Structure formats: C-alpha cells, structure tokens
Length: 217
Image 1 (spheres, rainbow, N blue to C red):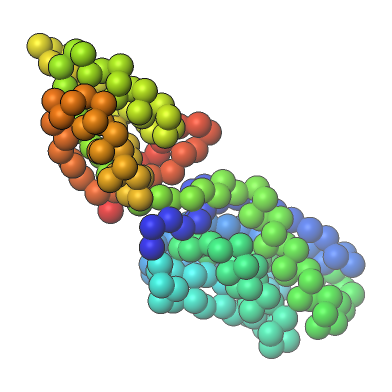
Image 2 (cartoon, rainbow, N blue to C red):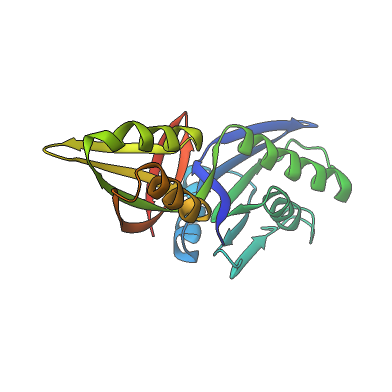
C-alpha cells in the first residue's frame, strides 16, 4: 500500500446519552499485543465502569480486526465501533469506549448510535495523518544546479531536509514514491545530467502541521 490513514496522536471524546457517559479513548497501535495492553490500561483507569468495549484494526492488509461488546447486548458496541474505524479508512488504530451506566436502558438501536458517536468524538480529538511511501533522495550538484533543483522541488511541494555546502552542494530531499521517476527526470534535464542522484533509504512520511514527519520502514 502506497498511502494509508492512521492516528498519529490519540485523543479522547465523551458523549452523554440518557444519563449514561460514553468515553472514547483512541490510540495508534502496531500489533495485537499493543492493542490489548492499551485495553488493559484503560480498564485500570476506569476500573469502576460497567463496560469497556473495544475495537482495533492492525496491519496494512487488516490482518487483525477485533472487537468486543464487553457485556453489552451482542452487536451493539464493538462492531459499530469497528465499523467507524473501517469507515474512516483507518489502519493500525484502536479505540476503547468506556460506559458509565446512567440508569436508563437505551435499547439496541440507541446503544449502536451511542457507541458509534463516541468513537467519532474520540477521532475528532485525535490527530489523523496520511502516511505516504517515499524515499530520501541525495542529490550532489555544482552550484549552477541549486536553483533548478530547488525550483523542481518547489513545483512538487517536496521537502528539502538538509543542504550541505562545500566545493559542491549536497541536498537531501523527501520524495513520494510515485513521484520519484518524474522528479529524477526533471532534475536530470534541468541540470543537463550534471546532478548525481542516490536513493539513501525507503521510508514513510506524513505532513503534520506543515512539517514532514519521517517514519522508518
């Protein structure tokens, strides 16, 4: 998968439905072990709650998708929560919804709506990003080529991470995988073949608050 959505920083959201409190806690996870450890952490925090329902999706092929109603009527909590995560196209994400019972029964439809809304509220307060597949490209050029390379990078909104100046110039540029071929060609043509390019490594990255955040493959 070239690009995918995930949670960069988890958040929390709360709704009240007929005096019952539903508290959604969202977190990024990379494995089933992480997801279950997160669940236990929330259970300890809200040890006095009647229910701590959970849902998570792990793996870029959704190798693991799990959910639990934790005592609520079957299909009224975990599955609706998971459906929200899948509907938002999120990967490697877990959510736990804690319910403090308010004394009024909501019925199956009311529970489905409440648990779904709680997850949506939690996601609103989380930082969701798109991780893109890319490379770190090292370009060695003479001083005549700097402006042309900067122009080509600017045209594509590419991030220049670092530039080293000696008798020549060495630039380190973050390039989305799907743009690598076109960018290399543009640099070659713009510098009349004088720039030397080398892929330093494969990676994933996301633009967060206007800045590039790198994640190792």
